[in-house]
Length: 191
Image (cartoon, rainbow, N blue to C red):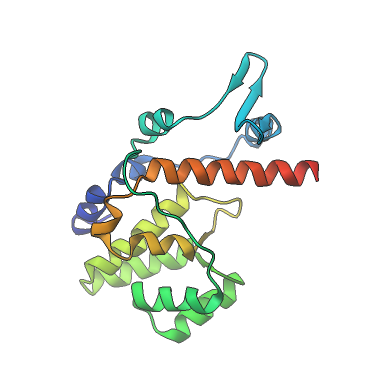
């Protein structure tokens, strides 16, 4: 990230994520954890006992704030997604429409976000560049999905006002997100 964008990322409290990477090369290990997840207790049942991931774990491992406002992400229809993209990434309606058609829904490609970031930096539009970078950053780390190529536009809502984003408890948000995804995966395995 360029220096001007890094200031925004630091202020929000997500600068530690820049050094993080999602390595999914050991799918067997990930599958083993998923198989041992019990949604009733929100914990992993391991041979050594029952283990869960806590707020303190998130704060210590990811250096994310665990105190602050809790941001909820409400589902969006495609029109709301396009409105968010147009307004907060400052692209034209056709470009937003093309991207949502290509991703078949409320998503944008991480490669597309990198392109938006570069274009906005070249134009000196630092706030918009920061939003694109932040959405890409959380798409590669906190809210990564199994595609490893897309991010839901729903998370762009958290970066509409960088001053407000500073007050969020990102640690709590990611913990809820992770628990929800683990519950969904285990439901699909058993159902």
